[in-house]
Length: 159
Image (cartoon, rainbow, N blue to C red; front, top):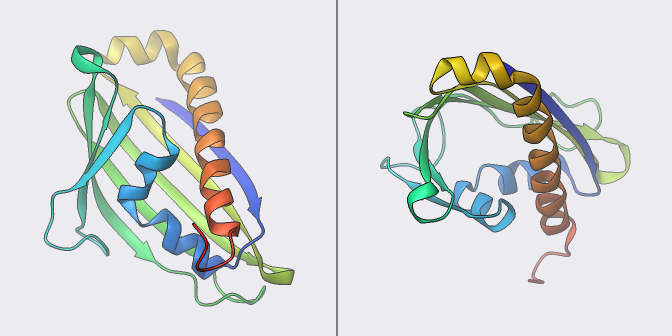
């Protein structure tokens, strides 16, 4: 399996960061060459299903995901419990699990830790390229989190 973790401190409260991260369609604004569609009746909570489509033309693939854990942050104070969301990836190309934790910090800030533990098909490819997939995944999601943070840090009402 390819495994990576990315951490970023955000100058926005945990509840706001959580709201940004679980707005699945917004991930397309942050991740290049990606679109996201919700395929379940509800977009939130355990059981929500969405598909991220990444790539260009025939070099695209679907990454269907189902939310299997949904625990929003208990609040924005540093001693409040963090939030955690886990998704199972069950596509033809990418399989495994992704999750993020949003922890409240002092001063109205929060920390996001995004983790993935995935394989790609064919599985032989993951065995041969796991270190490379981990480095590329970490770099890509670091960029995604920085883009999300810029959005979460904007004053409310400003686009």
